[in-house]
Length: 140
Image (cartoon, rainbow, N blue to C red):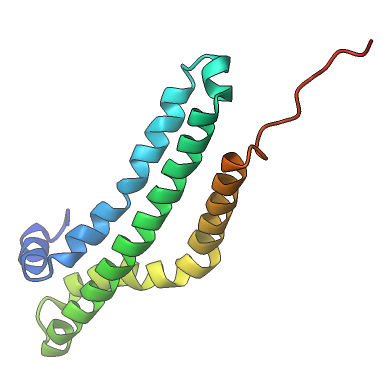
């Protein structure tokens, strides 16, 4: 959008799902902010079950929302752009809009789905206290 600002603005007004797609990546920022905030927590807070479960739940929710919102927005952007590309309207801009949306579907199976499965497994472990390291006991 730096080089074709007016063209991108016109294209985004006609294809608003592209804006939603771009914003879907911001959803994970809430989860990342919890990681930063937790660096200031006491060890006792970090070991509490409520923190361990909620931290894993936030990661799972962020990934799920990203997959759903990003997927729907990507699909709708691709579908919305192709008639304009075929008609020859702002083809250079539309191709730049469609490329990351297609890449979303290429990357999801190899990166995002395994991340989601891992987050789900860690969440289930936290609920069952399986994520807590064994406590250190003194030998007598």
